[in-house]
Length: 195
Image (cartoon, rainbow, N blue to C red; front, side):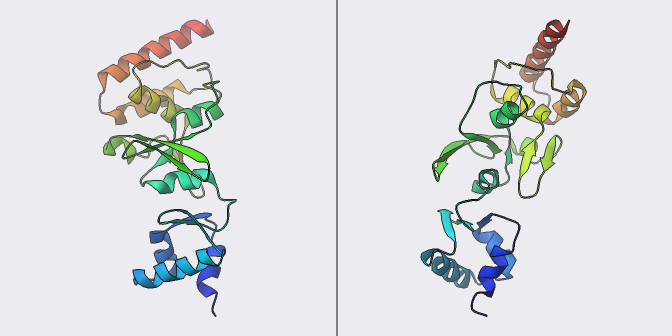
């Protein structure tokens, strides 16, 4: 009986929990009760306090899951996705995240580069994959997110992009003419490269 609350967390498929997540999991509205329980579990080494208000079952948590819990709403994007898709060859040790403010945050030795997106873009799910415990941009959406943030950017390999999807997602950026011009330039460079 004594560990029922802990078991609820340990049996969850999540590896990272915000204070709010725990309240919902436990069906508790008494925040003081939840705070005391969490404090005891952390002190006893049964949970890990990763950051203020964010807890993990242990140190083997999914860093992508933590990345989207620091600020919500959020999704993994930018160079993290582009590197995995082979669109950029430069290695970045930080995990890039789109959210409602910009900040670099370090947790457990991992740097999270959080970049601000306009709310209308951030909350639009076009080009976002919802995975088990986090959301991540498709390569096409990450490509556009980078163009949204950077006036000029060198992409190493645009061959894996689905250009039809890129142009389909473009409208969520609200008719940004600078971005449209940059996209068209990238597309023309891509076409010259494959000819």
